[in-house]
Structure formats: structure tokens, C-alpha cells
Length: 331
Ligand code: SF4
Ligand code: SF4
Image (cartoon, protein in one colour):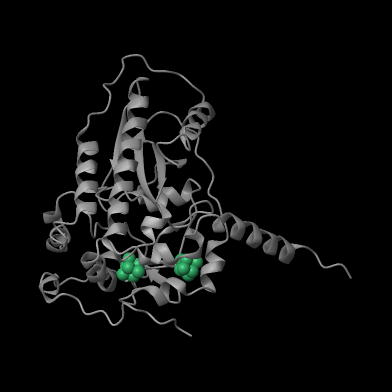
């Protein structure tokens, strides 16, 4: 039975509704399409004029203009994004692919960021028509303060998201500088306006976790309570393997985020999106609430995997259950 939801029914602000374009965001995302095709940029465009929902992206920034939490977090993020990266050194450092990756992974947990992984660049990490010269995507994850994100949908949670995007941006810039000081071209890509690079597919492939019903990645260590950034480079890093903490099977039997989502944007079943069955957030339902509540984040905060200390235990329990199910029966 669905839990009581204090935020339903949700009625979108008419001022915002008037800004919706004729084309549906779900159509841009390819909901219901049976054939695979590249993703298209639907939101968080570096230039909002480039996308049909650009007026809504601008409207997001008109909300809560005097909120001190949001204002401070945005100012700090802007300062981080404006800072330069190191110049490119002339001499290229040489390391084996494994040694490059080990050096990068060793940085995670030292304070600047919590998660690190490496994926080999693939065309489906890019939006339609985009190309990039770099061969590697270094993925960076930074954990939210769980108490702050749990305040969702209050502005405190939105401010925490901005703060962590800033922190992820600072980490990406510092990793790019580290590579450039060793003679390797490196380009930080910071969220949420990541342009042509999609962050979720390489983050899944490099071992951060699996897609949850709420459309965010769930990792065993941090649940869905983290943000991403990336560094694109040609330095020959060895890829890190994907991991299966058991999220997919868990989501099939859980409906906490579905019940908690005010505009009912989450489905009990996977949906067909550009030829692939996957968990999917209905963009046209989510966006009005998301925009009116500084990014919302309710689904991330209520996910049981996000609660500190819970995810690793869950992953262990699910792994034990799977190995029991796979064990041969003794007669
Ligand atoms: S972010 Fe979107 S999908 Fe998640 S709870 Fe809020 S409105 Fe629902
Ligand atoms: S709340 Fe439950 S169903 Fe939703 S993503 Fe988390 S584990 Fe999956």
C-alpha cells in the first residue's frame, strides 16, 4: 500500500507551466522508442538557448533568489569554476596503465573526493552528433552530507547539491591539473551542465554502482547520495570494472521512492527508452516539482541505500542471498 505523501497532490506553478515547450522532454529522451539511438541534450545545457526546455532552465535560477544557503553555495561554485587549471608541462610522464589508475584511485578518500573510477570512452557517452578526441573518462564522485540532503525538498538540500557540485568541480580541476603538470592534456567536465558528455553511463561502467528506480546511480558505499564530475584525457589509464551491488533486484521489490515522489514521476516497472528497458524518471512530471524546489532530491534522500552505513550491509546481504540461490542443492 502506498505511504501517505505530504507533498501530494502537487499543482505546478502556472508561471512555470506557461514556459513548457510543445515538445515533450520524454520524447526528447526517447521514451517508448524501440530502436537504439544516441541521447539528446534535454536539460542543463551550457547554453539554455540550445534546448527546447531552456526557458525552464533559466526559470529554475529565479527561484528563492534571497535564500542564504543557495546564494552562498552558488557563489562558491562560481569561484571554483572560474579558477584556472595548471598549464600543460612539456615533458610527458610515463607510467603503466595500471600505475596511472592506481595513482588516481589513491586520491579518493583523501578529502577532495570520495569515489574514483576509469572508463574507456565510448560513443554512447556522448550526446547525438558529438565527438571527442580523448580516450579515457576519469570519474569522480563526492558524497552529500546526508543530514543536509535529508532536508529535501527544503532549500537546505538544494544548497547541499550545489555545494557538492562545486566540490566535484574543484576535484575535477585538481585531477586535470595533476595530469597537465605531467604533460598530459586533461579537461575537467563539471555538473550539472556537462554539455555533450553524459556522466551516468561511464560512472556505471567504471564501477560506481547501478541505476536505481529513481534514475540515479546507487553505490554500495554512498547509496544515491553523491554527485559526479569527470576528467577527459588521453593518458593511458586502465579501466576499472563495473560492479553489481544488487540494486536492480532490490528496486524490483521496493517502492519507497515511487511513493515519496510528489508528482508521481517514478514507475513501478522499467520502461523502454531508445531500445533499452531501464528505470526511467518521467521528465515532464519530475521537472515542474524539481524546478520549484531547488532540484527536489526527495527520491535520493529516502532511498534506503543512501542512509549512512546501510548500503554496504545491503550489498553483502544480497550477495549472500545470490550465492545461496546459485549453490547446487545437496540431495
Ligand atoms: S527529483 Fe523528481 S523524481 Fe525525484 S522525487 Fe523529486 S520530483 Fe520525484
Ligand atoms: S527507494 Fe527503493 S526502489 Fe527507489 S531507488 Fe531506492 S531502493 Fe530502488
